[in-house]
Image (cartoon, rainbow, N blue to C red; front, side, top):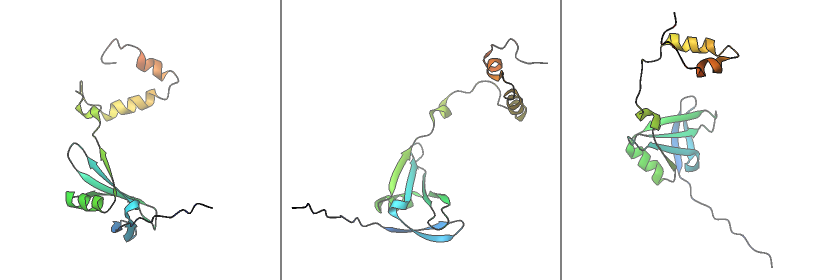
Length: 124
């Protein structure tokens, strides 16, 4: 006797959102993802437009986040990078520093130059 498999259909909410290229589009809760920052509770939602396939991300107030999550949209909580809390030493990097580094990368021995201990703080 063959086993009979029953398909369970899950009800999916229809969500209307706005694509900057196509205007209003209809999505399902599977098409949208909500992201919330753990540090400041700032929320946003993201989706790929079903018409132009453009990736769209928009800020969302708490009530919109709650509404989307209660409609079955996936929630992703993220944390700020730990590097933001690290102390900073020395002067800020300037555009000249960035250009010098770019030129340094043109040399085959750039890594040896960067890894070598510095004997002076300023070259003439």
